[in-house]
Length: 221
Image 1: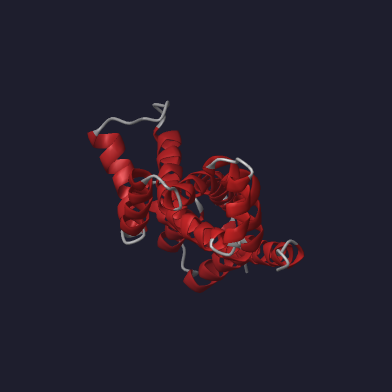
Image 2 (image 1 turned 135 degrees about the horizontal axis):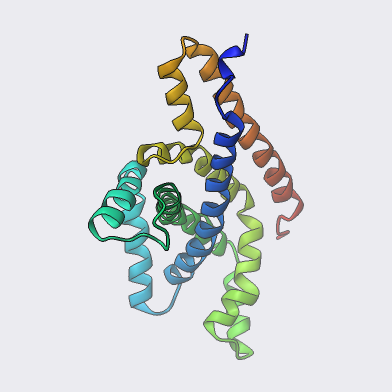
């Protein structure tokens, strides 16, 4: 029944999806946290940059961002990200595009968590001499992260599914292989079912585990 899978590296394609997701998730968390800090910063320039970045990037289709990463950065501006290998370059540019896009959603999720921290705690921190960065790092962000594990899980699941867009610039992940198999085989429904099941396997445990962590680590008010 599944003879059509012979000759295709399905596991390799999903492993590429996992690598795209993992690297993009780490980069998005770092950049998104910095953006959230900018958005609540007392410095108007930083606050304005953070607000403008989030509002602009969230309203640009992901496909446009990924294509710009490849056609714009690589072909026009000559950005190679340290490699001349076409496949490695496409992978790195895809990660860069996913980070730039997903960080905007991480920022907004984290900013909502920051807003749940009582203002009195920040005022108390300032009263004992802590600066803005110290207050944010030591008091506000630890509580904010604990309160937004659920929303961040949703962002991670969306990122996993969004990696299919990388096929547009030739990254050999799951969606690219599915397209090739549909073109070559006469088993469209089964192929679709196999890849749908693969994404369920990737995303369902993520949602369940992070959902459990969200309840376990929730800040008690």
